[in-house]
Length: 460
Image 1 (cartoon, rainbow, N blue to C red):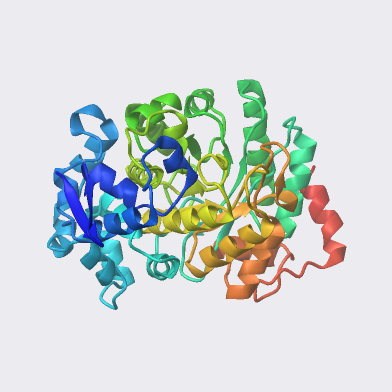
Image 2 (spheres, rainbow, N blue to C red; image 1 turned 90 degrees about the horizontal axis):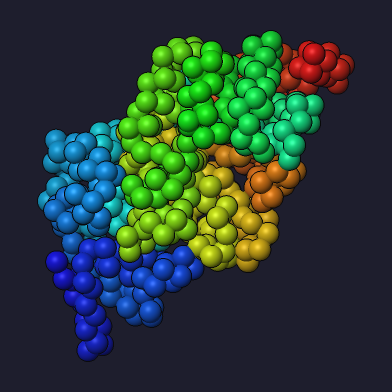
């Protein structure tokens, strides 16, 4: 279907819904690199006005990637909750925006609606929203998941303790874990990005995390962020795997470049569930995504990178994950050029993920060749905390020496928790108190006399 709008006697024509979504997207380098971005600000505004008049039903009739060509499209269409969609099915994209910002869009209403929304619908409405709109609506969403603790409760923000080491050195990793726990990080999970893909090395990391968590009785979960096939091999060998990790994208071809498809993810999900290692819940999957991944694999089908990212959330949603993480600035300035684009993308990703019913966290990050700095990340971190982000990263000094990018530190998590009065997962807070690392109000207040004993128990 062709879409049109005229501004100042200039008629703008958009070939189809895919083209309209791309031209309505706020400026970003990835879409310009792909040759699908609006050429002028006026064309972008014309696209947004035309998009506002598109009925939400149109997204079910006009997939941005054909149903017969892409298993992600088939997943989105085949699992769409028509009864859940019924209450807003008569709305246009613009009317849906107005409803989301109204008092009628309560937390309960949004929870009931989430499975009735497709990724393309939420991507479309995000393109009509200012940053404050994205924050306000995301704040109203509440998504709760459980494994050994409870993630996503109102008034809580979790942190993944990320103790990466360039040589996968167990002592170095353990030192980073000690640092993070003493600063209150790790309730989302303790998750290592391994430098090696050697299964023997990965096994050692899995066993290290299991030993620390078990010996100290920490109510959290571990994850070694290796390829899902490696994790399946570990499970078959009886290794103590908590969370099953995989990077995913929003098209079948992009996922193929990662070496996965939906059938493999289903197999991994079933394998993770079969271990029954969770104590308070059965959410066993951890997914990471990022705007630009489909474009970098030349697998975007002409779809803008933000809509592709929302489609990746459609993949994640099918597996009831404990955590989903948008690594927003990690791919580089070819896709998100500067701090302004990274901030906007982070707020979009959080909004879209939460509206689709996902426990969305954000790795507030940038690469060293991007036009961004830590002040930009402070701004995005603060905005996401105001929007109710599920979790962030806790990296020693905010500088990941293995992945070579800048993220958020243990102290950054302390900052936003203090600023907004946010707590950790309740089971984790209770453990900190019982271990003498926090006071009765769960503020970190470890008695210095306890620290040598705690450290010796952790590194034993």
